[in-house]
Length: 275
Image (cartoon, rainbow, N blue to C red; front, side, top):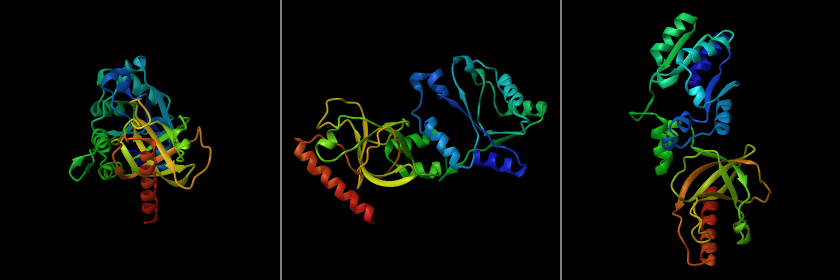
């Protein structure tokens, strides 16, 4: 949809603008049923920039905005665009109070205000309609191949490095604890991973889970040990790709057994790097 809009804008020397909402509307309207985010706003900005679109309108979605009639929403877009030439949306997109707006209404409003409307039809992969729900389910199962096919890119998690308990450093394997902006994670376990720090590719071992050997806290933690790396990166953003599942997370009898297993995990990761 974004590429279609960008191509049409280029044809008429126009400016493509992506419009998105923050937070996700479901988090405001139905928070208990809100889906896990595949791409949080910080990540979305970077991905849209990579598509060559330089303008992004982020609308704060709250209950007041949710009460906006669809006609009023379109009127605001027309008023603040000089001029609005085209709106490109998904074929089944709905908008406005009570989701009353749809493609047919948008086309009628377009005829009145002299802008074109493009409804992008569903896109399929191996016969299945691509949707955020299908992608979330694939990531949740650890089916990164299917997620990649549907996304058109590798599924990655973007997060900020935060301070942890420094236990990894104490046992000889310093890790970067990631406060992830995404919310959809793959299954718990240990992974060989790639990570990008300021555009530079690093390799490492990710542990995703509750660290049962060393912690009683059942909260999920995402931490990565970067190979051949020795820098203070607190507060910096890392983008992580889960390359290969190595093993499930497990509780070891003692820390020494954990250290032996981590050593084996790192050796396996180095061997995968060499391939």
